[in-house]
Picture 1: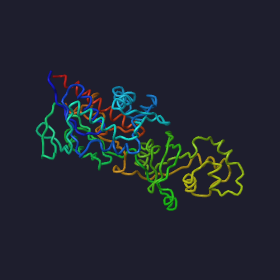
Picture 2: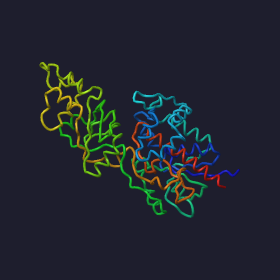
Picture 3: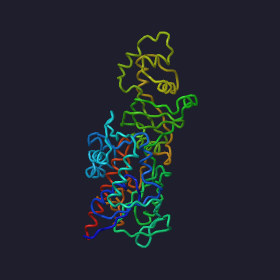
Picture 4: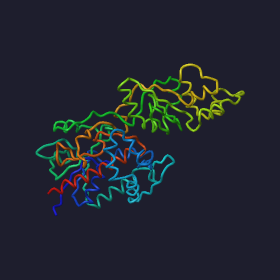
Length: 402
């Protein structure tokens, strides 16, 4: 049987998963990485605790991918959340499920898992070439800038997994877009996803509370609501709960110039239960201390209430309703350089079920290069790696034509 050679461009999670699956299928695999070391974005994401996947039931899980859920569903059949947990534990990284249903390695960081993964890939014969930057197409192959000078490669198949447009300093700079567009591939403009939003805080609030968390809170935009945490910043607000709503908030700002985010500062209490607490005599407590004691609000939450124009309503019912529905007007979106991920990329109608580009047979695409998005919380990493597994299966099926 002919042993095919497959080159993968990009050593992030999608590219490395494709490499693992292709090596297991018996192909020779070379991975090109433009940076001096692989998976820098994964390492950055794992600094605060690497969220591998989520235990949410499949229907809810798929809903996190919005309009792309029908395309992502087969990816998750090929590499499911259960597969992700088994994969990590197979690398010696025990996992646990957090209170929110998110799955983490017990080490709570990416570096041990990545070291074990790279060792397994090397043992499987995968060749990793760092500082090998893809520079375009030429002579029926791909060109690279390498420490030894320009190089031209003509493998039997290629998987492109060079990322989208976010965190460009870590390697995802989207410089590849015009190269594919010149060959008839439609690429949607990149837009920030899982990103913070601008809100005009008062100087006093920004000086005192920037960098402080709001937790636990529930947030709603339109008909979509989530529970989680957020962080006050000088420019506005960010954090997991905000990221889960980022697609809708971004689109509303692009369309209307502003978006309304409704924040429930006591999601664990009903309006009636909260009003009952607030109806207790205040005594000699200041308003701030009373809100802290009776309402269970943190100083930053009290400060957020005071950001609303006008006096705080002192009636227990009205104040409870205010606490349960603080309305923030968001006026801008932070840029791609501050976004965790991006929307946009190769549109999904440009690839077949195996993620091969219809316009360029033998060239496959995986990860954030494709036009889909998902919130953090395990959904983003899960689909990225699942797309790498899907592209690897597509490559193997395509090479069988020989």
